[in-house]
Length: 243
Image (cartoon, rainbow, N blue to C red; front, side, top):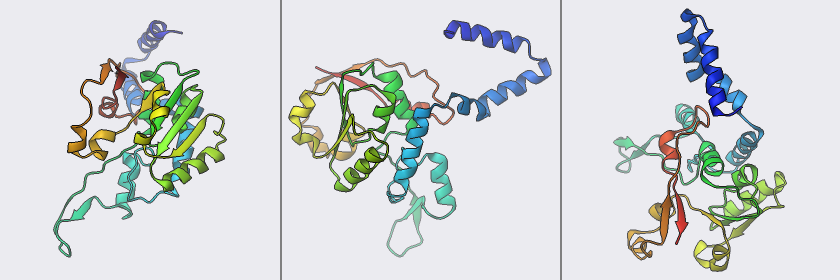
C-alpha cells in the first residue's frame, strides 16, 4: 500500500481502539522497541555485525558513531572504560567535561545517506574518503565502491571486513591520500566526505579551496529510520553538485 492508504488504515485502526486504551497505544508506538524490530531489515543487521567485529580491533579512545551509539558510550563511561573528563593541569584533580567527536557516520545516518539522499547508483562509481563502504554495499547497487584511507591500520581493518563478508566483488580499499587521486575523483559519480574540511584541514588551507565550486541541493529530512535516529545529526548531511 502507498502512504495515503497506510494513513487511512492507521486512522481506521485508531478509531476502533477503546478510549481508555488509546493513550497507552500511542505511548507504545512512541517508546516500544517492537516496531523498530519489525522494521529492521537484514541490511542494517549486517552493518551492526560489522561494527561489532570492528570494536574488537579499534581502541575505545576512538569514539566512532558507527561502532558506538550514545547508549553504548554511556555504558562504557559507567563501567569506567571511558572517561567524560580530562585533566586541565597535569597531576591536578581539576577536570572539565570532555566532548565526544566522531568523524564517521552512524548506521542510521548511513541508512539515510543511501536510502534518502542519493539516487539509484546502479552502474555508478562511489568514492568514500575514509573507506567506510559496508553501507554502500548493502544499501546501494553501485557497481564500484572505492575507499580512500590514509591510515594503514584502518586499511587492514577494512580489508579484513571486506574479505570476511565477501564484498570483494564491488569494494576496493586504497591506502592513499585523496589529494593524490585526481584520476579516480574525475571518474567518480559520487564522493562521500565526512567532516573532512572542518576537522582535517587547518584554516589557512581551507581558505585556499576554490569558492563556489559546488551547488547545494535540497534534501527531505522528514524521514523515520528508527527510534535511535538523531534528527539533528541527519540535518548535518548535505548533498552537493560539483559545478
